[in-house]
Structure formats: C-alpha cells, structure tokens
Image 1 (cartoon, rainbow, N blue to C red):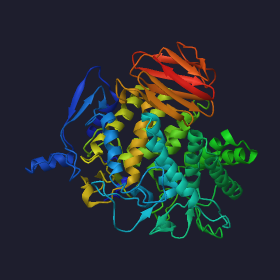
Image 2: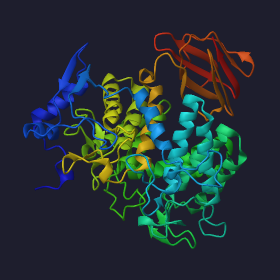
Image 3: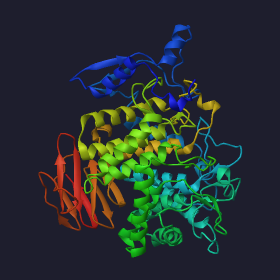
Image 4: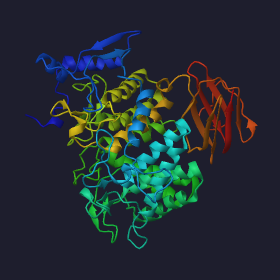
Length: 552
C-alpha cells in the first residue's frame, strides 16, 4: 500500500465530488444534513452507544453536520466558544497574578502542555518560548482589544518581560535572542538540543513591536531592535539564515528550515519605527528567499522545535498558512501575490487539508505535518485566516464558504471543558483521540482563539450581535476602553480599525477633531474618515496617530 501522504486523495471520485459540491455550490436557502462521519457510522453500525460531549472525555458528539448555503454550520456559536476557551486557560494560573512575574507563573509560561481538565502538567517541563510565547502575546493583545479587559495586556507584557530577561547572553555569537526551546528549567532542549532556531526570534520580535505600539514602552522596541542587530549581519547572500545554530559560538546545527516569512514581516514592521537601510535590505533579501524557496520550489523543511531534521520537501501547515496569509494581506498593492498565495495553499491542501472522516466533515480541517497527520484546531483556524484574507481581496463566494466552514469546524474540536483539542482526529488511524489520554498543547488552544478573533474582520457575522467589539486594527491599540454607547482607544501611528457595535455611532473623533463620515472609504490606506454599515453594524475608521473616540 502507498504511504498515507501519497494516497491523500484516494477516496472514491463520487465522494470527492460530493464534498467539493457541498462546499462550493451554495444553493440559495438550501440546508443539507450530512450523515455522521465514517468512523461514527461504523460505531453506530456495531451498536456502540455514543457518549455526549463531556468535560471528562472531551468527545464531540458525531451527530449530523448541517450545511446551509454551502457552509458547514457550527456545533455552537463561535462567539460562545471563545470565552469558554479563555476560562479554560485560567485554570492553570495557580498563584499567578497578571502584571507580576516575580512569583508563581501561569502554566503556559514553562509548559507547552496542559491537562484536558485545564490543570497543570506535572511531568517534565518543556516549552517553546520564542514561537509559542510570541503567539500567546498576539492572542492576548487581540483579546484585550476585543474586550477592553486590562488583564490580557498585562499577561502579554509578562510573557515579553520574561523573554527579555531570558534571552541569549550579550557575549554570545547570537546575542539577545529569545530561546526557541526551554526544558526542565534550562534554555535549549528538545530536538533543538543545544541550538536555537533563528526564525523564531524574528517571530517574537513582531510581538515585541506590537507591545511597543500597544503600550509605548520603549523596552519592547529596543528588544526588537537587538534581535534585528543580531540577525541582519548573519543573513547570507541568498537571503537565508542557518536554521539551527549553537548560540554561543555560531556553529550551524541544521542548515535549512524555518519560516522565511517571519524575517520578511519582522524587518518590515521594525521599519515602521526604526527605518534603516539595513532592515530594508534584510527584508528584501528574505522576500526573495521566500519567493524562490517556498513559492517557486515548494521547499519548506523542518519547522517545529521538537522535530528532527527533515528534507526540504517536508510540509508543515503552520509556515505554509503564515506565508499564504502574508501574500494575501499584501495583494492589494501587489496583485500578483494572489496567485502565489494560492499556489502555497494548493500544495498544502493536497497533503494536509482533510474534508472527510472527521466529525465536522465536509468542512476543511488541517493536519499539522505530513509525518504527524493529526487534525488540530489551531492549524485549521490559521488556514482559515489565510482564506479570510484571500476573501478580502477577491470577494469570491467559494473562498468565503470554505473559510467559514473551516472556522465552524473548530467548534467541533472544543471539549466540554473549553479546550480546543490538539489531537482531534488521526487521519491515518481514522479516529478521534480522547484528550485525557494524549498531550494537549496550550499552543493549539490559543492559536485557535487568536485566529477566530482575527477572522472577524473578514466575517463580522461571527462576532456577537448587540455588543461592542474591536475586531482588528492595522497597528497596536493603546488605552482601549468600552462604555455604554461609547468606545475609545489610541494609536502610535496612522491606523485603520474595524469594530462591530451594538449602537449607531453619531460622532467619531480623532485627535480631538471630528472625522467625516464617508459613504465609502477610499481605496488604499490614504485619507481619514469613517464608514458605518447599519446592516452589519460594522464601523471602519481610518485616522492619523492619536486618541480616538466613538459615541452615539
């Protein structure tokens, strides 16, 4: 029999056609009910009773999946799933107090894993700070803007402060870089062994920059600048960096791997606040590498910190989705990026995206790697973020249907305890796994929250009606506050901010001056003003740096 990755599309042609038809057709007002997954159907055939979802087992009931107008419907509203996921996260806080890192830390600081009931893992401590902490900072800043709750800004700052204090020594060949792995109380470990991964500091560098924008604290800008000062001189002629290096002396441990898109976007964002020729040059060379290696050659290689060296043909969903997403976000000014991003997604969809067998089928659900073919909520949500940004530039209905189906699919991956499950479905063994018997990762849990929030800009119908929520912004937001019939924030730079309101705005002020209401915001990012759609209740504001207030 062929290996699994070579028989990804070996299901019967009629079944393939049905799946594509259901997601793409979009009958007006049509509701289609899909039978339980093949696994669930087989269990039912054998007379095995199906357990309801519970906090103990984390199982998702394999009842029928409803498809309306080509969109798989959620098991429960996404707007309800998010706060439950947030409450799950708090369960391992212990004595941690947001805003203080001198005492006990929350479980996600030093452990990548969490028990299925939300309690701390007591076995060996292993974490991947440079990547996962960066992602958590991004999630917490998103949730802070969404709710106005200061707790999440403090949690984001605590993670950044911890990494600033636990980076490579100033005397190292690769100084001032957050560690990609931390094991049993010591830096480095896992498959990195004694090395660090060079792309992951660029990723957390973006988180530092977002915190600088959100707080004005220059320590975060300086932390990002130090990362750049280490990385830029190490870039090679082809635009690449060695993937894994021994930080003390610079010895190359593994040459190829990582995510070039992290370097591209890091140096690009740093240029907003520290515009230097060296940063522009590093960004341009990294972009050429991304185009050549990832888009044209389809080469990716090793990515995860716990994975041993792989060939360039090895595929991982995370860097592929990030790359496609970046290309789609920049396609307004570079329309040729649309096809490039689609090319990346096609390569990913051929091996890692599954529309059959799992409980949310025929929705797309994403496996982590070709060699670790488990469908996970976070990877699915990230893929949908790329689709969401593709939809924003193309407005193609089939892209929207696929993205919404995938976002709704993650609600089937949430346990009764609120956990977005890591090992939702094994595509090789063709079965779901009990979260009480496998590793559950904080990363997959919070990645899901992060991207569900970020997709709301493209799909505001996912956000709750009758409430006030900032859905997205082009720069970090400061001093976010919600009041009855009012909302305020501030930015360090010109910005475009999208929100969904429960009231009709009458006045929008920026820098103490009223902005003009426009029937349509001009194309591009130029000009100031605001537009409110009374049907969707979505307000988009474009303004210069300063304080902004919205009142009814």
